[in-house]
Length: 225
Image (cartoon, rainbow, N blue to C red; front, side, top):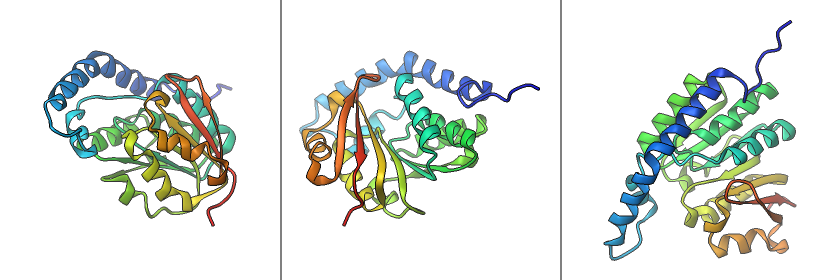
């Protein structure tokens, strides 16, 4: 009997992930260089919405090490609900959705500020055969993730860094004891965010892991009062 492919060996999933990676390699450096050059002439740093427009053509995929770690977490944790801040072209969503499918159920709800990127992510999920396990909400994550269909088992933060803490605080009432938070791009994280998750009184146990360019990996110790 032929063993059915697992999520990361599935040809459809691998094809879409490889396509996103090639897009990032070919286009992201020029897009980001142009975005930084444009914003350098502005009197104030760009807002999240302005940055989303500047980076609309940048795939900005999660590093494969982080994606594989996310897949492993979902397979072992067997979450009913995963939430993602910063979907972009949907690479990290694909890793999580593949694991949910291999678990036999569960759902990931992603959020993406830029409508074009959200549509592109939905298309990638459909092509990979994983759209039944994912929902992408378009708009400000602080609003779009305020109402969720149940407790959140796993959070991936990989969007606008200055919004990591505001988005996490929106989600905290839905986190249970034992929920996990993966925060990508460790060198770029604002001190107020890392201080929050590294302070035991705030209900977390957190450490840094050398995956990709670094992640903050946090365990929720208790449900919010």
